[in-house]
Length: 472
Ligand code: DUC
Ligand code: ZN
Ligand code: ZN
Image (cartoon, rainbow, N blue to C red):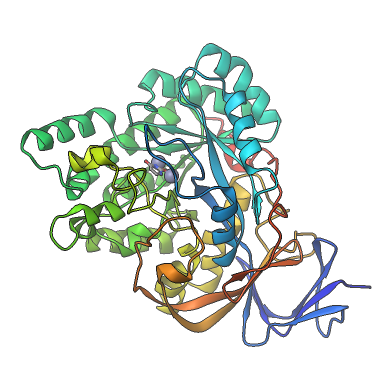
C-alpha cells in the first residue's frame, strides 16, 4: 500500500493501549498501524510518544466580554497557540448576546474564524436569551447543522438563566439530543457576597475568590443536577474547582444519572492565594477566573476525581486577556472593585504539558488516562468520534509527537497566545510536545508554527451518544 507519511519507531498511546508500532498516513487519514512501514515522507519518532492530537473542548476566542474589554486572542493566535501546545482541535463558543438571534451570532463567529485557524475548530453555542423563537426554531435548526452542544450560565448579569429558563432549555436539549454544558455558580449568592465585600472596602482582585466560595458552586451544581434529573437530560458540569461540587457530581453519578464533569489546569496547580499577588495588589488580577482556584486540599480532591473517573474531560478554559492593558485585566473599573476585572486566564498551550507533568510524570495518572482526558473523551462526548480523538485506522491523522522526558520551564516568551503573561510563569514541567500534525501535515514543530493559517477547518459535529436521555 502506498503511504504518504510514515511515523516510525515511536510508542503509540491510545485511551486503551500502548503499542510500539509505526503509523501510516495516506491523504488526511491514518490507514495503517504496523511494523517497518515505508512511505515517501518518514518521520523518526524513536524515543517519543505518538499521541492523538489534543482536543481542547473548552476555549473562548474573540468573545465579547463587556464594555471596553477585548479578548487577547483572535482565531489565528489562539489556534497557533493550541497547535504549539500539542492540540489539533479546539471547541470555542459562539455567544448569543441578549436580544440577538443565535443564528446571526454563529454566522458572525464563523466569519471571524474562516481562513484564520491553524487547527480544526467546532463551535459550541452559548444560550443567553432562550426566547420561544430560539427554543422552537433556532436551536433545533442549528443542532441539525452540527452545533450539537451548548452552554448555559447560572451566574453573570448578561448571561444568567432563571431556573425556569434552564428547565426549558434542558427540555429542548433532551428532545434534540444536544449536550448541555453548565456553568454552575449561583447568581444571587455571588451578588450578596460581592455587595457585602464592596461595602467593607474589600475590593482587591483577591476578593473575587472570596465572593464565590465553594458553597456557591456546590449549590448551583446540585441545582443543575436536580433540574437535569427532573427533565432526564444528560449535562456536563464544566470547570469544576474542588471537592464540594465534585461530591455532588459523584453522588449523582453513583445514582446512575448521566452527569459528566470537566476540570482544568488551574484547579490542580493554582490556589486563591495567587490572587493576592505579592501585596494584595492588581497583579492578582492575572489569576482572576471563575470558579476561582481554591486550596491544596481542593487540588487533592480534583486528583481523586481525575483518577477515579468522576471527570471525563480536562480542558483549559482558555479565556485570555492582556494584563497590562486598559482593555484587559487593568481595565480602569477593575481598580474600584474585583467585580469589573475580566474573568479568565490563558491556557490552551500549557494544558497538555501541565497535566502530563503533574499527572503522568509524577505517577498520579496513567498515560492512557492522560490521552482519554485530553483527547478521546472530548471527541466522544462532543460528537467527533471516530473521526477524531484516537490513533487507529480511519481516524484523521491528528497526531502529536511527545517527548516524555523533556524538561521545560513555562515562560511567556516561549508561548504563542495573544496574552502578555502566563499564570504559570516559571512552572517547571517534564514532558513536552515536539511536533503537531493536523490531518497528516506538520503544523507546529519544536515550538515553531510551520502550518498554514486557514488549514484548520470549521467542522460540523454529530449528535453525541452521551447526550441520550436515560429513559427514566
Ligand atoms: N466561565 C468560563 O467558562 N470561562 C471564563 C469565565 C467564566 O465564567
Ligand atoms: Zn463558565
Ligand atoms: Zn470557559
